[in-house]
Image (cartoon, rainbow, N blue to C red; front, side):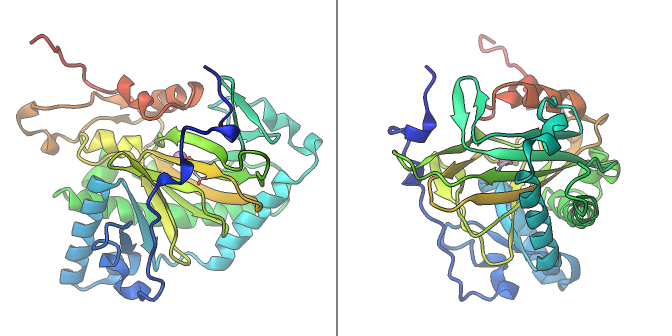
Length: 349
Ligand code: OGA
Ligand code: NI
């Protein structure tokens, strides 16, 4: 049945436990501050890079736990300047407010086209309307970018390069948290020549009857890791233990969302996080999303060290390009896309 999530009454968007962080916790000691209260775990990036061996080992253990339990965490002390984040968001905001004719060539783009803009207050997806505009740009190995606003190219290039460096460090730490060499996971996916997308989401104010609505339905991301920051308006929710939790960021933090390729390469030990965006306020919400993925031609399969004797193999190898095309061409529906990579078991056996 087609339904209009803007007036959805059965899905309580706000049932999630709010992840209230104690703002008094200093960021430098944040590596464990979220671990005790059942909240979202906070990884101190500086500890991963410069920390003494024992602190670093603890941060990596925490990171592994966050990937196992949530597929979701926050990263602080990441060194990406606030001004660059602001400039990226502002420039994307400018793009959304350009007249239609400036964007028209990107409006009809398909999932594998390097620049795509979804316009209008509503996108129509299988009869369900989502309260979201978006801009998607392929950022690496080559940056593709609309010509306007003119500064978008430089800002996007700088922002994406910073995020690539950050995610490569996270990828090494994740590899270590799995008991592997730091280089093992990056190498298994060809991350050195990674594919990267930059996405800006704009969720207009939504204060009509019914109030809350769905900006983006529940899904996991098709890549390896997603980094996200938002303007001051909450709305990102993450599923954990069958409940939706509102993700509230610490000041300056990035959210990190584990994607399907991490689930595949870790043979299901780490899960791609199910998440969604809800809207419902007087203020527009914006998020800027940078996703790092395997090289498009990499065939991603579980690393064999995690599959002792080849038993319990959960996923088969799938070329990332095919995976992405599959996920992007179908209706977003939870984690259904992963099924194309899942090893089917003979239930009767
Ligand atoms: C996405 C996404 C959530 C948000 O773009 O894949 O999950 O908060 N966005 O905008
Ligand atoms: Ni997402």
